[in-house]
Amino acid sequence: MNKNNLFYIIMGLILLIIPELFSNFVIYAIGAFILIYALINAISYMKNKDLTANLTLAIITGIIGLVVIIVPEKIASIIPLVIGIFIVFVGISKLSEAGFYKGTNFYTYKMVEGLLNLLVGLIICFNPFKTLTLLLRIVGVILIITGSSDTALNIKKPTNKKVVKKIK
Image (cartoon, helix red, strand yellow):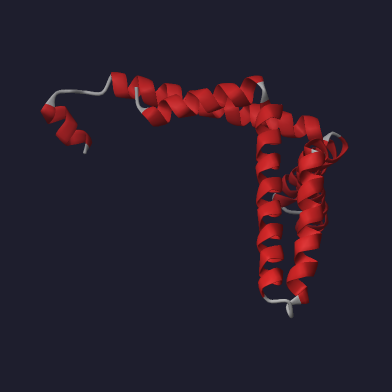
């Protein structure tokens, strides 16, 4: 079994079974990187006392980093919320665009497209954390399928040199 395929399957299972663990890990990692950035700016300020921008940046990013680490669930729910708001605006845009196509075959398509975008965006906005969990589970299933199918293909790979040459 290829190491990549095993990684895909394991990551897929983690995302499928405990997606909250993965999202919290990512949020903690982002918080840690922000805190490291704050520390770098604080050290830079201490070396060059005349750069007060570094001190201000260190304080602001330090506070942001701590908030991200202290409330990862809230931060994780903000990401889908922003995406949901964006999708709502896309839906509204598609609905207004549909007016230009009134009387053509594209009118119905644009109306359905706009309404679907609007509906999906609103669902994400009103339930962002469960939407993130669902999205991570879908990605998990895709990773499991990818890892499993690649493993199956590697197991059943043709060994006949003539067949291998035709494939290449």
